[in-house]
Amino acid sequence: MKDADLYLPSQYVRQIADQIARMGAHLPDWFQQLQQPGPSGELEVQHLSFTDFRRLVLEAIRLTGDPAFGLLVGERLLVNSHGLLGYVSSQSVTPREALTLIARYFPLRTSLLLVRLELTRNHARLCFQENLPLGDIAQPVLEAIVLTIKNLFDYVTMGVCRVDAAAFSFARPAHEALAHELFGCEVSWEAGWNGFALPLARLDQPVRASNPQALMQALQRCQEELARLARQTDLSSRVRRLMLEKQNGLPSLPMTARLLNLTPRTLHRRLIEEGSSYRDILESVRRQIALDLLRDEQLTLQE
Image (cartoon, rainbow, N blue to C red; front, side, top):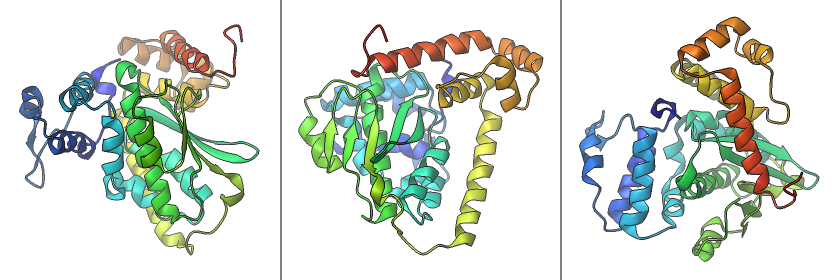
């Protein structure tokens, strides 16, 4: 992947740096050299490449000696850390609306993961999957993000509909007890998916009185911000995200072009200009989906 594919607001990076300092470790010299005075005068990193982000996460775990570092960062991220995502979700009238808004506007906070809402017979699940190949930092990143979004959901729904389970696709870690404590619910491992679940029966319980004007204003701001991010994101990343969102039936080149308001020829040409192609992206997405399915113990290798 290209470093330019990473979108991560500076306040999240600052939380990682602050947690390193809170735990008595010194920030790496290379990271300190990347910091510049921000609008408020505080030192911050405005544009962190994926290479440097991965290095920071791995060094944070090494310097603190705590493999649960991701959970500790996730627990400290408060509602006001989530910008427009926190603002629009706080206008939710029901837990269902809160989940829907979080899934829709999660891209405003980072390009690391995709989020989708799944409804089963008895539960609603907010599922998180890699949008960028995270490799050896997948576990701390997923733990941090799933926990902080679960805490955001708890805050905006005010306990009306409590999360009753969290799940991760990786192996049971040594810090299992801490995960149970911080999530405040059952946590399962090697589950084939990442995220949290809550009872469907409570999904439409009212949380607060409706304020249509406030919600409309929040939605408008979110849509404007999504449009701005789309203009800044390269076409290859947009095609990849589109495929991952529609993985039950990967769109053809003509359909992908239509969804992006381009002609197939223009889409092909612009992808070539970026050093990519529709086929390359398709094979990469298929590979990622296959790996996700292999982690799901409900399927055999042949399936």
